[in-house]
Amino acid sequence: MPYDPSAFPPFAVTVDLVVLTVRRHALCALAVRRGEPPFQGRWALPGGFVRADEDLAQAAARELAEETGLHAHDPSVPAQDNGAHLEQLATYGDPKRDPRMRVVSVAHLALAPDLPAPRAGGDASNARWAPVEELLQQGGYGRDGEPMAPLAFDHHQILADGVERARSKIEYSSLATAFCPSEFTVGELRRVYEAVWGVALDPRNFHRKVTGTPGFLVPTGGTTTRQGGRPAQLFRAGGATLLNPPMLRPEV
Amino acid sequence: MPYDPSAFPPFAVTVDLVVLTVRRHALCALAVRRGEPPFQGRWALPGGFVRADEDLAQAAARELAEETGLHAHDPSVPAQDNGAHLEQLATYGDPKRDPRMRVVSVAHLALAPDLPAPRAGGDASNARWAPVEELLQQGGYGRDGEPMAPLAFDHHQILADGVERARSKIEYSSLATAFCPSEFTVGELRRVYEAVWGVALDPRNFHRKVTGTPGFLVPTGGTTTRQGGRPAQLFRAGGATLLNPPMLRPEV
DNA sequence: AGTGTTTATCGTCAGGCAGACGACTATGAT
DNA sequence: ATCATAGTCGTCTGCCTGACGATAAACACT
Image (cartoon, rainbow over all chains, first blue to last red; front, side, top):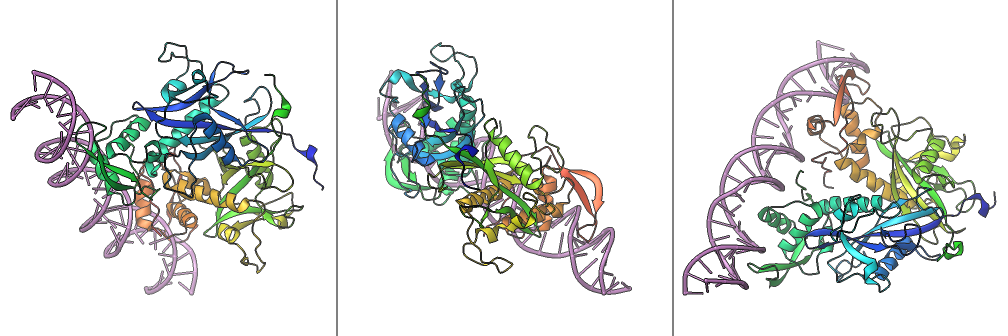
């Protein structure tokens, strides 16, 4: 049977991004305001069409750079500075997810250290870091008193899936370091876990766990007092990417 | 800006299936022989185009039923008989992965109990269960002495990803029961773990672990001697889907 | 200078769980 | 009857975690 282009329906393929960071002890996601219908004026996850000659990961990295200026980590270069972790999350293809046409969106998850203000085409009012709790809560009011409309399209689901992925993945991997600057203290790393999980962790047990896991953290020799209190050792993420045994997330 | 269909390139979207089962103490995957170019005559994963009005999960369930006769579990109906577990795996979209055109494939992972012979359009010689080791080993010889060509397209990578997902997911979930018939013994479940991980497990510690985890297994009251030896209690998968603490995969 | 506050870091102790492995049981095969 | 095969129950030891006391080193006050 020869190749027949009419044998399959055409789809539009996009990438959507769940970009997470930790700001002021809260897990935050990047949201952009839609400038055009459908869902005009509503908040949505950043994203865009995959180009004709582009790989999915490339498209996600391009969108990430356009929205945040961040460069994605090349996984083959482990010790890169200030780059974001980027991985594929899941693909969403409900026939009715976009009222205009048949769109399949390959969602990606990005984890970034705390950043300066976001930029979306230079217009700051159209992009912001919002606490994920705020974005995921339906029909409430934001911190500015503005009524919260749910995210556009199926982005509520995508964001929820991305947050859940991040929450579970820091259990058994060193991924939490992606939220930290290149040098960080044990306490800063602990506050990342606390923000992502929304729980309080015992500083002494946490310290024992992370410093006792070989290859997880490597001391740089320096110290800092930027968190106040007694000076803390500075560390860099070690080569180990898997945490075995995993960090245990406390029960509710 | 109005909707402009020329603003995005058209893609073909397919679903590919990694269907795993355990046969004769080996983890096996379903492979079909390609009847047409490209890669004519080579083994490949089953799959097909997503239809215009179909969700991705629906398309995967339809392909699974066409290839194996299995019906996918509806996740909302936990205690279903003889259905396969089906979940989305990952999406593959390299621009050159299909030489004919731009194809994005949403791979799915299916886990099934041991089945009778596969059927692919009624022609048995064009579908088979093959040990994943055999399918993944490049350039060797199969058990029939036939030289092994690598799988078509990027299906080697997809299969490897699916196997890795299955291996890690049975650690912390009750997913291994998806490889078992509706009633099974502790020993049969243990042999599933041994086949998937390729290791030997201590029968006594395994028994203690699975029977000691509340909600994992519920006894049916019956016993069987189908494995020989002393009669063994029959169990059914319990409601618990998460295994906490997880089953530990032995070090190499 | 002294006092309080904050954060970091080290230590101790008890409980839970996993790995190693001994012992016993109940079937079918020879 | 004896053996081989599988299943099931226990014991012991070592590791890891959670709870928490104690000390250390900075800064901000007074």
